[in-house]
Length: 198
Image 1 (cartoon, rainbow, N blue to C red):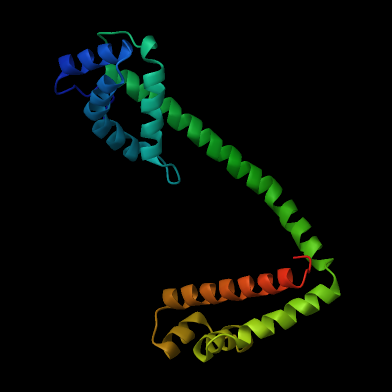
Image 2 (tube, rainbow, N blue to C red; image 1 turned 90 degrees about the vertical axis):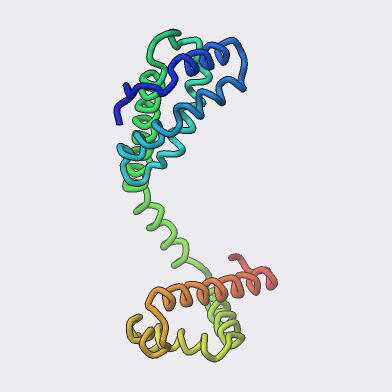
């Protein structure tokens, strides 16, 4: 969709913009209603994966409202709004690229530090964690313990587990995740209760 798409009622839009510039926020609601459909559709067609087009649209309206005094009355308001949206999208993509670059550069180092921290943990704490884990595991129902046995002791593939239990692979993955969460929380509670350094 082109930023120069004609308005269905350009006079009403220009009137609402003029009122909004004079400090009438309700008039800007009219502007939003008149433009949001075309703006959101246009953004949805150009936003790359990982970018929320609705968020860009909302931010674009906020920026447009705060910069209404920069808009030249009588010109194509929608084209002006789409230009703002284009810059907001560019800013968001730059932010995401920097974030990705940061994680690519620093995540391996953070992971290495965490692994070192864990490997340097007290053997006593590690031993206690294993005892707590066994205790927490024994509190699970028999069929949940069976999932753990299949997966972590017998190394049964997820597909085979699904076949044995009559469930989908996705359901098995979700069940294992829930079991791990329950066990983790149980172990953490016991560590805290005993004053151990988590």
